[in-house]
Amino acid sequence: MSDSKIDTSHPIEDKSARASKIERERFWLVENAEAIAEANAYIEKHGLPFAKYRQF
Image 1 (cartoon, rainbow, N blue to C red):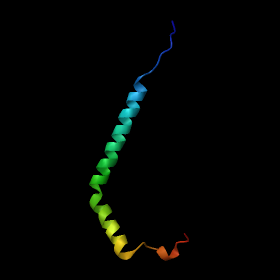
Image 2: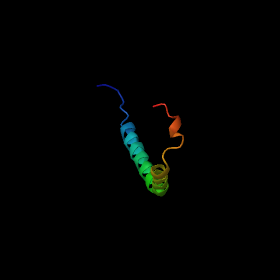
Image 3: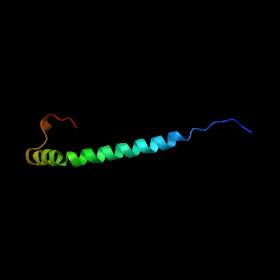
Image 4: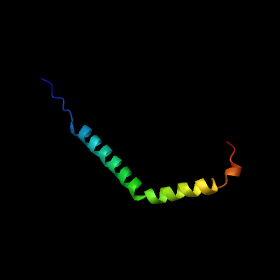
């Protein structure tokens, strides 16, 4: 019989950490949706700042 010890808590912690990150990202997007929409509207109306200097 082997005395190998398998730590099964890491996969659970990893899954929990991923779920927390996804939730934080979703919350950030919801919280900042208005600012993002306003920035996009500004770019659509006025174009990108310094676009004339772009080399690509």
